[in-house]
Length: 254
Image: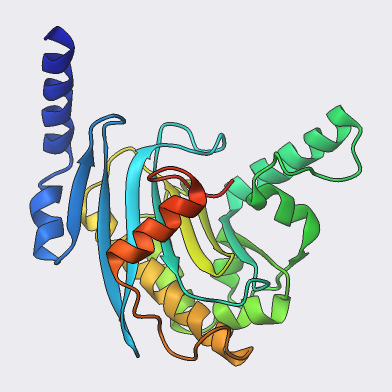
């Protein structure tokens, strides 16, 4: 009884701190569900594509990565990209932290490679080439590596760069840990975030959607994977597939 009461009080307090987030999400046409076990929430939405709507999922809760302390926002979207299209954008401070961690991993274990226990973000810093980003402001605030630097430069070109630069003047001004990457045909985002206010979520979704559009364009330039059109997978089917592959609801690849 006491445990239930405490959980209810903490949940009510959290929702109050979210600044009307449930109502705001519903106004956007998104489904939001509270995850009581971790004091977080899940939002399912979709963006328009040439073959219908493309579903995405946003989660907020305890961080799943050691390099993000406290809580984080996570987004993912199935794009049916070529599986070898591997591109990674990191906030500059986070990139420096992961590079240092990778170096310490090498020296402490006397290994000549980073094994599978390290997250992709760390391994890619050692495996892939750093991308020469054209925009000076973007280059000073973010690090980029990719399996193909030319494709990554094309991905970040144009209005996606503008979105990043606008974010730097607003919600990324304090340089929180940020990861944006294409992996196994999907687009992923992680952001250190202790206060998931509606304005912030709207900005994150906007950047993520623009990154998805550009990644899809780059993927199409390499030829079809299974279709040349935006996939029209329903949210429920996409969610079930992810849960089956990842092993548990709300999990991400490690």
